[in-house]
Length: 182
Image (cartoon, rainbow, N blue to C red; front, side, top):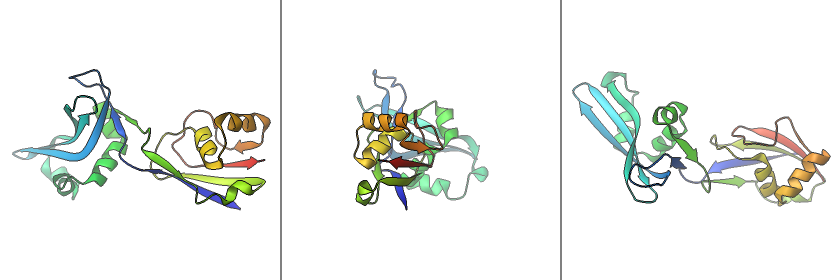
């Protein structure tokens, strides 16, 4: 029987970027936007606050863009400070690359295993699905979901009792499956 786990975001991740006012490298996105229009051109920024000093930084969403070429609804959502739009934009690789930022997901996700009934079985087939592209070590997910230590998970991989089509070392942010034999 295939068990399904879901890695779900619990809040917006921290933005990793150097603060110009202090030595901190972490910013908290508030979900607030600033929109500035100059005739037919428009700028949109997502605002983020430094976790150490509170300095505000602007993450560029649109820059000197013709108003007519803006996606319908985007400006309304930015004017309404839509937190869903902030989450979408933070996950957009174009926005991250343009602003030279990385995301810090520590403490911003949880694993939903659907209960602990799978812990008693001899063989467990698990499908792990990501609700957002959150980079997590599969060993950590398996340890948390099966109530094992990371060292025990590493031992199971070495012995061949934990197998997957994907490499379980490193980080993954995409769906995968694995089989655990106890």
